[in-house]
Length: 98
Image: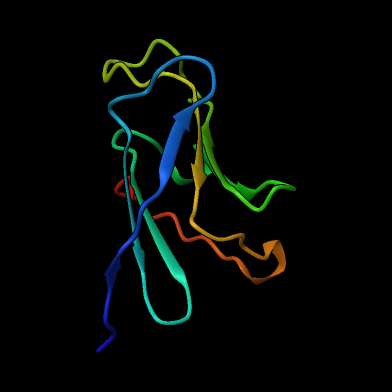
């Protein structure tokens, strides 16, 4: 069982605001865990990457922009309290928008 610590982060929308996307960050002893709730999206519509500044970028381009759920394209940048190594990152997207 790991221990989680509160982490002070900044999450910024690039472009249109996407308040419906909820992001939570936790830190264990060795790494950060970032949870993004993106309901109504398919796995292949969500992209997670780290940028050259070591920040985490979560973005989406819905396959059907006129979807009944009101899901719109978004890009969120998560700044963590310390830089991340882009070569030591991984992402998992579930079918349920997490």
